[in-house]
Image (tube, rainbow, N blue to C red; front, top):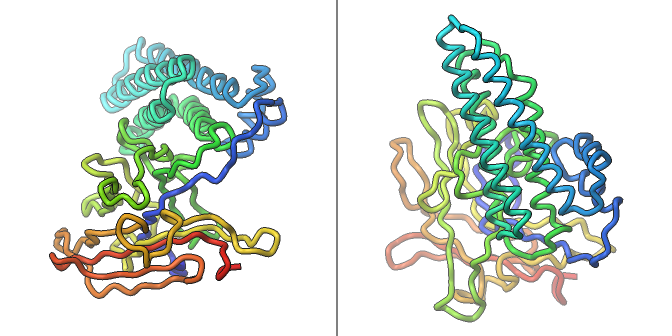
Length: 367
């Protein structure tokens, strides 16, 4: 499957999600390894400065230092609001917005404290990611309040900006693959408004996607997966993306949980509607050592193996101009390298489209 070259006229559903390919490292860790992790965060300079200040020599200790720094900053922001509101405020909108900010920072302090507890007690990784993701969401509520009143300047804009950068760095460290070294698929989001040229990013690593859920974390591992060759142990994740006609925002939903949205200002052509919807899988193939990558797609088995063996997408629907979900008809199927990954589609007894897809990557027929 290839990406659209049009400027964001395509909604892309990647059923393969993201599979981490990093291998576990040895138990020996060094300062270089901790600081190397800073290359993958939102604001590397903040991270390297913190590594030097805290003396963190492992990625876990650096993660703890980052979460702690964010918690301290959130508390400082909360105290700043309390100091401002201690004096009489005649502007009712400013007072209301500062009340939102106080709650925003207070909630951030609480969830970051939960994240610190997760690290100290070796809680499940998804729980840690969820708490840090929630802190990012809460920290953004202050800016959201002031953005609805463009003529009203936020007196806590600077500390809010620093706080969001610190929390975002904390999240990047929390999902750093060299630390966890797993091969779990990930639930991720991505956006771009120039066909992947220079804009966009994954998850919450830059301004763009706004998470509103504190129960589903983008970037978190999916630990319940299907079992190959067992038709009774096949699992699905239901994903829906739709546009809010009033705001122009594009919302993401997983199952019954609304996860967050892409603000309308990110897009040009998608400001009205999508002209194409693509479903399927993608891999990155830089041809290391001159060979095709061995990165698997889906289950790592070709589409021809069918149910219980190959990855699949079913119940494929689109939203029409009347905001009604209708079955997608007359789908076109395309595999860029069919000897490496292929696709086979059909229609089920209820008239809904489905398809199997995936493959092993490099093999005898895919050198």
